[in-house]
Image (cartoon, rainbow, N blue to C red; front, side, top):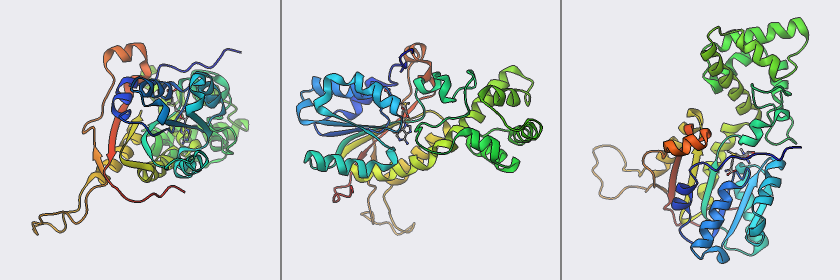
Length: 329
Ligand SMILES: C[S@@+](CC[C@H](N)C(=O)[O-])C[C@H]1O[C@@H](n2cnc3c(N)ncnc32)[C@H](O)[C@@H]1O
């Protein structure tokens, strides 16, 4: 069997420049093949921080944990890899820091959202409309809901709502109607190839077909993995996990994710100046986050040439300004 292929980590130099400023606990909430984690460990080593640092790598995919374990093998002493969901970041940090007898807050947190190139390129995972595979799309193969269950059991109305909500797909109703009709005629939509054919039949223009396929597959993937819900939870809890002046970097790949990240960061960075016109000298409360990047950082043409996945990446970074007590569980 071919070993899984993880592409170069996106915006890796920028990530290490923004995050690696001092020794301490680093959390990579989306370990994948361990590319970013390796870059962080190397940067810690270069800066002489490695001995006083620990990297906690989280992924919900066993294959990713295996690949990252091999990539990070020379840093075994300073890394802990955990199977889990990044929405449980507080509990995971609490448990590991307790086990290791550490102070318990992180100086750097990274979320590189979405699926990995390895997950997309493995036909058996069912993430790609370009490859024949089962309608699976679970990042965590121990979880119960698959894309096939949604495609084959949801009503036409529910499917249309999903494709519109998470894929922003203009032909969502027509595609849902065709899926349900196909089910009635044949019993079930058996795999990615059949689903892709139904979607193609809803759009004549070949160029538009590709966009429609991406949008519908994206919608299913988001629902199967509850991606937006867990992202909101993780952003919220990560703030509690950050040390004073600790930084969090998030890379998003589509507008639904980026909107959530942007509005959370902006909201948490705002100070409350009370009712308009009162002209207060001090705010009632100060924002708990400082925006390190006012505009998202994007990849340059060289990186995009080398790694096409970087094309849609947007990196946002914030710093924790709150000195409050420890909340990790
Ligand atoms: C874009 S890849 C990360 C690639 C990684 N930065 C690297 O350098 O190889 C995203 C990874 O995060 C994992 N992932 C996505 N959502 C997750 C979640 N809610 N909890 C834990 N892992 C998640 C996926 O399984 C995938 O392996």
